[in-house]
Image 1 (cartoon, rainbow, N blue to C red):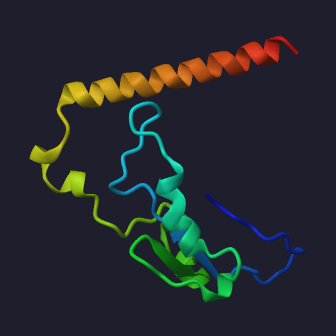
Image 2: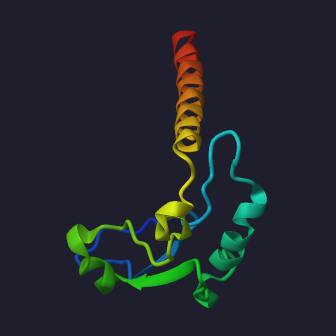
Length: 125
């Protein structure tokens, strides 16, 4: 999720730092069997602190990266990880291939249903 403030063009970057919340690592959401719920976002909402962003504090999942740190990254990539993915530590800990396959099929079926619905809506305009 990205939030931006609208600012006038400037030769000097307006952004001094970017806050990143890692909701991906070790969460394993799916479109049907393990969907994201409001409870999954409560920690993000508390960390984000929309009422006073100058009082934000880093946590295990919420980190601040300075503009200079980001610019030093390869290709200025924002795909940033700092938490260790527990499922990748031990290959014996991975889900069975049939479980992975079932999850992929389920996600593709849900995506196809959604695209079909959108296409039908567009055709009926």
